[in-house]
Amino acid sequence: MELTQNQKIKKYVSYCLILAVLDLIQNTAGLSVEIFGARCFLLLPAAIIFAMGEDILGGTMVGLFAGLLWDLTSGVHMGFNCVYIALMCFIASALASNIARDTFITNMIMCIVTISIYCTVYWLFFIIIKGVEGAEDTILSFYFPCGIYTTLISPIMWLILNPVKKKLNLINNQDFR
Image 1 (cartoon, rainbow, N blue to C red):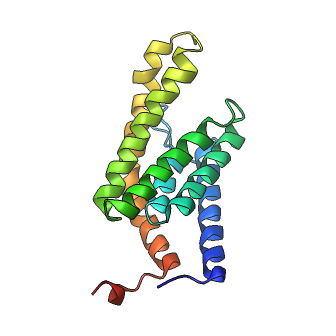
Image 2: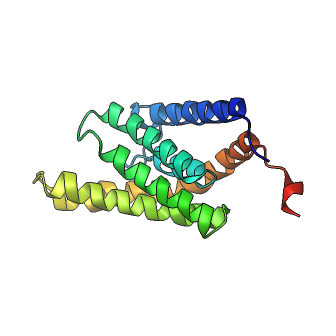
Image 3: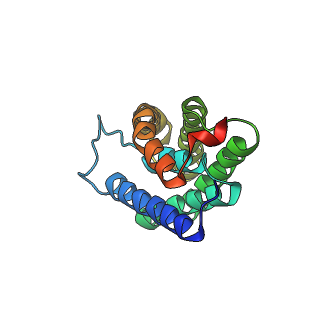
């Protein structure tokens, strides 16, 4: 069942509002729970979960918006999160559109891959290459714990966001006979 233009606008506005709230929680000190200094990167799994149910353009735009929010609140290395999250959401939506189904397992695999690559690439580009003091230790003391924390939160986020996504997409089980 195809969504009307009005329904699509409501869906994407809802996605944007949810991503904005998650960005606020993620990037405001004291709003999210830190475990031994490890923070949860809430925008990564949320963007992937939303992108897995969209067409390629819609999924990429969701990722671009999530990355833009993260870049605006970080104020450093502008554009990295936009490009990275948009690219991973493009891959996720292309995967769900052409190869795999939008299931819990495919969502979690894509979230784990996205989180792992993000932590590694960010550490290499912005910590190691910049020559930050004690850079070698930060992979084990910050980025690895953040990646594990985010990975453990991803199934909970899927359980919360997937019903919202289905409701906004007006999925009718009778269409899959």
